Length: 139
Image (cartoon, rainbow, N blue to C red; front, side, top):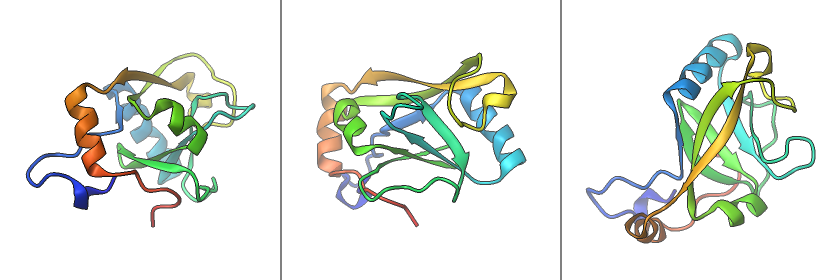
């Protein structure tokens, strides 16, 4: 998010958030694996599930969209997926079960999933004022 374009004194609208249960799981995974990164794509293997990887072990593409950070973990979404989801806040949660793919939470008996809600008119206006989210790796 381009915070330089945000209205002074007004907190930026978060494009991604995390539930307490998912934040607790993320903290556990950080203890086990160190710094992490999330990526959500529309690929064949992971569907559109949010995937959690050790930071540096997943290559962020130049078109991937940086939505923000949850529990000290950068969150990216594929450019094509962003086009579908840009009007919604992504809410990362976890539930019992084992998802498919290579995400780090699989051995924990839990899986991350994305819930969403549409931004209201005020939030959407503020997002437009914030400008386009950044793309590619965030140093």
